[in-house]
Length: 382
Ligand code: SF4
Image (cartoon, rainbow, N blue to C red; front, side, top):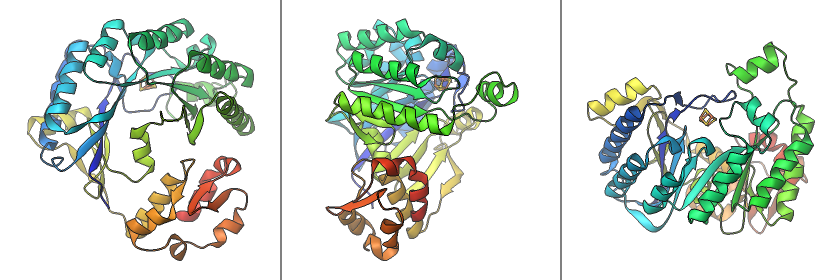
């Protein structure tokens, strides 16, 4: 079930301030001292994981958040030294950092490149200032343009940007303008996310309690998605996963691990892992996390260890694999689980969802129409 390759995820749980739609695990914090202490703590967690990971080659590292670009060049360099000290990072590893345009600077970009980071993922969300304000983002359109160009000029040749649609009262026209501007800037990878309004966030309150804005109807949300995918395909991007497009050869290796049943280890509070045949998360509360580190114990939250049956694991394999354009290989399924997929699942699924899910050349995959109703189809396998 395991491979010798590992994806390492490092969570940086700080943001200068919370965006109005965000319910990710991040804390508002502006103290450089706290960032520095946190880097020391997460470095100690990596020290503790060294032995467990001795048999693995780390071929992808993802520094995500939160806002990793808040870290100073010195702290970032220290963090990457800890990575190399504790993990066998392959020469061709994909090493990504997430950055927010508002905190990205020339010095930081230089430090990333010097530390061997070869991919930068910039959280743009939109090139429309009104939409950016509605989301509570700290940057504006000009800064987004500037920082993408700054990263490229400094030497990054693998740049990803995130764009968001389905934002209350965002028109399809302004959305597609953002997609066009994204394409114009020429990043190698563009992710597309439909905004989920999560209870408890300020934007949720503004929409559903204060009725300041209308939510985006589902039918418009789907239209935005399809129109954007079409534009991106015409511009030469491959729609390799439901929410991700890339120039051929620039698909994210790290993200593909999540959808290809490969192992990954997450460090930092709340980070998830699929490692050594187990699925688990670290303590999400900063206090509990730091306490564990102080006592030199791995900060894994034992209450989060998932014990799945073989059938449930098969469901996870299919559910995540169908997110990819290429879908899943029946041969790979048989090798992993020593059983044929259609002896576990009813072959009539193909008839029931005709035109939505296809079997071709020993691969099972969703069609474009199927991706719209992916949850309904995937539910057949869990
Ligand atoms: S930058 Fe990202 S993690 Fe931080 S508050 Fe905004 S959406 Fe959340």
